[in-house]
Image 1 (cartoon, rainbow, N blue to C red):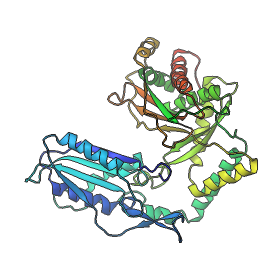
Image 2 (image 1 turned 90 degrees about the vertical axis):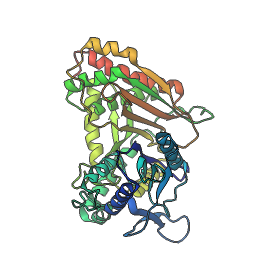
Image 3 (image 1 turned 60 degrees about the vertical axis):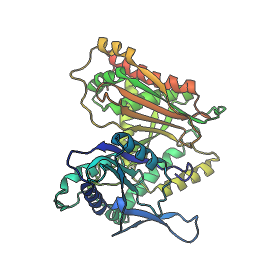
Length: 423
């Protein structure tokens, strides 16, 4: 955030049920702020000087602003405009709350029509957002009464627990795991440097109905999650493009399998390290290796980030190289139902005609070497999968980008059509 001078937000806009008032929205805002510590956490310097690292400060009381806008005849459009302004406006984590909320109301009546709510991604992740929504069932909107205690670990409890012996042991084990791999991985994920484009980072999205169908068939045969299959295909394609069969991947791990974490309204995701060897292996063998690597990465994805950054710098200095750990994989899909029944080879093949590659915006906003996001296609959650790859053109050319995305699709489809892919 400091480098790119931008903040990532989660949330959005929605129409409100008839009869909802501005007062109801204010009650909801007060409810979530009082319930969830992450939403009333800000930063202060941990020492003198402006360069001191930040520490978190939890406020026990305070006030937060709910902005109210008069309906101009198109409340949906106005809400979208407010959201865009909220996302673009500067945010100071030392003075501002990590919540921005507004309501579009009918003038002179107090009737609320549309709602805008954004939450800084620093304090809440995707599963934390789902936990926040689920907790709204514990608000009595008529009285503002809380109907149940807050569920899930709170950040202050978590901070205390992380000082304990068990958490410190887990942290040290994670660092030992990372150091073992940092000493052996190739320093650069893509060893051949390229001339970067004027707008250095570019991205494209492949929307693939065939991949969605093929994943169901391969998952049924291999008995692993479809995300594992996609990561295996990604690893194989990067091995081919880079000429390095062994690759290190930062996979986003939710950490919510840990006790008390599932219902916590906070950000518990960390980037684990999965090292996958695709050399001299069939796709089925790579899927099996990927499954084991994912499990291990999840086990060791609980660590203090500052200590990890220092470890990466130290090992790089000792090896005399700058270590590139910026190859990411993030499966953002929720557990959507698979197609009814296992699709036939003919259905998978026919679906290839529906694949669409779209180029996204390019920019000079700093990002990772490469970051693959997996999403359910918008408006077709059970019909297609979106593969979005954002790359640094100093390492990956646009042509390589397209080859990778189409190659992932081809690998998964070929596996679905094969009778021999099993793990």
